[in-house]
Length: 249
Picture 1 (cartoon, helix red, strand yellow):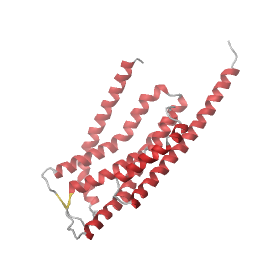
Picture 2 (cartoon, helix red, strand yellow):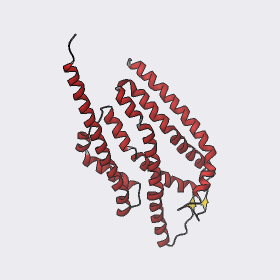
Picture 3 (spheres, rainbow, N blue to C red):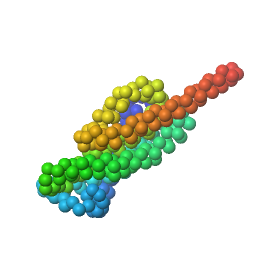
Picture 4 (tube, rainbow, N blue to C red):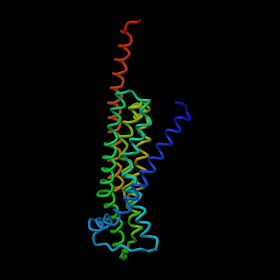
């Protein structure tokens, strides 16, 4: 395929992704009300009265939840489209192996959302409310501010949980290798620590609670990359030996 044909193919796949995203957002508009009602009954929101400080706040919440729902629905389809676009450049064994990453990537994203909400977000919320009580402040929460605070925490964490899948996929298509990951380990640690301090309350314990799982994810990614890379090396050696022993016609 020429460059123009590649760009045309990419444009078609992006259009389909946008269409699925719009459909997912439409579904999200219908699920926003029961989802917010459910979140009001579980910690840390139970017992809190939310307020609308602007006429746009309710509409903003509908659109935010619709967008998050749309992204969640679109994620597996997007990953499949990415795999389909790269498929012609992969060997048959690589095509089958990399296709398995799609459901695992979706699972890791859900796992990241759960970790972000039940661990990091609740810890951050309890920290901020304890500060408010120590200052004897009356806590009045706006619904837009509450969920904005929540999304700013859980979405980055969910994306970080995709790291092992991304590393495995890039290693599988030979764009990444464990040697490079080990070489940039110090810089990766620094970036992960900065991210953890940005999405957590300004105290060392919260940052450590978030940074440690992120660093473990990175090391797990290096381990997975090394396994894939080792298998690729063995396959390449086997193909080279087969090519050398094959009689010349």
